[in-house]
Image (cartoon, rainbow, N blue to C red; front, side):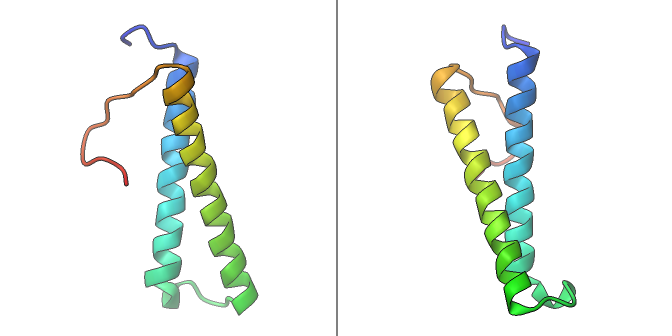
Length: 81
């Protein structure tokens, strides 16, 4: 575990998962909205807003963990944008 605590590993992994979930939701809303179904304009916008809020929260948590806990998890695959 390279000296990292299980708590920090779990918090970091949760933030990464939330970030990916938000990006997936935004992608679906932006590029594949026909598959979503019965959405009014307000529902659609509310879902987009929730996804953006989740993305911002997750990104801030990752930055905070990296900055204040000197934590940088090695991730396989391409870097996150």
